[in-house]
Image (cartoon, rainbow, N blue to C red; front, side):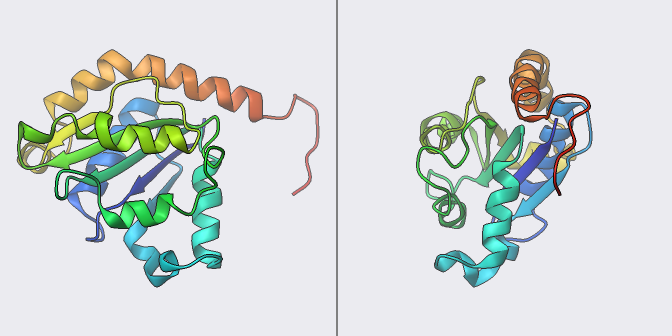
Length: 183
């Protein structure tokens, strides 16, 4: 199972990124295979055809389990994350990928943001989101190194469902045993 994290925080190496990697590792029960910290893609996000952005899109589309994370900004996900997600082909770009929307915020007022605002975007791009989104409060994530009670409870409740969904894709995508592939 290939696990990828996308972080749409404008600050590199952010608390959001730490929380997303922690969540992905706990959900997959394995280290993350790849991290896309969107802020490092720079101005290539503002147009179409940038080779670095295209490679990041291809890498994310090849995930079996994908954690997409953003801080809550003006009650929604960041424009930076939106710029990155706009690079995917509508309805097909994340087809078959099992995705987990994760957002961090200052308090409980925006706890529904991952499900109301980020999950529909991921579904529009073809991702499967078989579990509720995950919302973590900033101060808890910072104080507990991202392994908050909310994260642990989410993993205990939904980890097996997410792994099963992601593994089903991995099994469909993998070539049969004994078949050589180019590349």
